[in-house]
Length: 301
Ligand code: CP
Ligand code: NVA
Image (cartoon, rainbow, N blue to C red; front, side, top):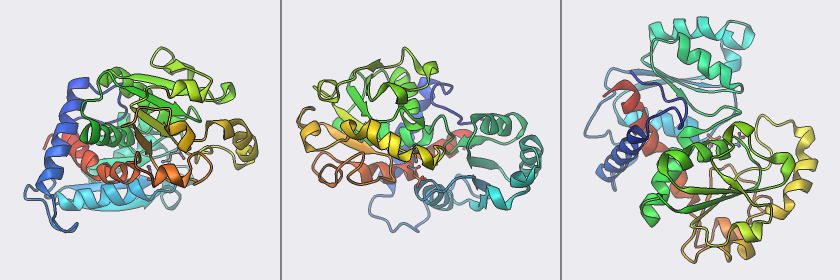
């Protein structure tokens, strides 16, 4: 049994194998209606709990559909509806759930909640986003990059904006998949110091994106950020918007990514999001395929 807690704590060979398996499963489904079961049914008889303490569209639907395509069953649980939201400990919740289900995916606030779930559960636990990281997203993003532009090894990836949880998983991936990562953003929104050494900082976005193979951004205000910080963050980040002028400084075949949900005309313009460099909806689709491969890895099926 394997947990999937973060990219930096999963062996690089396992990460590559997961992406290869995701691509194989995606190809095998090519052209089939979404509700068609996979020819392989590795999750037959398996029950999966999907716990959300924060909102979600992509993670919720892609995990649910993925489990069903592989022959398993799901239950989607909201943190506030569970005793978890009323003071029951994570440890007790983990031990109880392990008596009912075969796999737990959790989207939560504090990383410690995820770690406690993994420590006390006797079934695999998958990180569906915490305040600190979002590894499933970046597995889909690596898969998407390689589908379009080949191996990501040695490529230049530029992140423009907030040094947030999605950036952190890109930083972990930079080491595991051996690509160069540049962060461009304002000093108050620099990434977690724990990520130092995994990326370089360039304050000027126009210089940072020179020669980029991939330009990435994300919302300026994450779900765990106080709404009171919204105006200040917008003022700090305005100069880091990904627009046509910025994309024009990247390589001609550069890709643009955003994990979504986006705030159009804030962190990225619609002209970029809907433009020729954008692969945002391929990223969203690949959440499904990548997570199916992650679940198989966790369950050893
Ligand atoms: N990208 C992502 O995780 O989207 P959701 O918040 O909709 O799940
Ligand atoms: N950084 C964003 C990602 C959402 C998928 C957040 O945490 O809200």
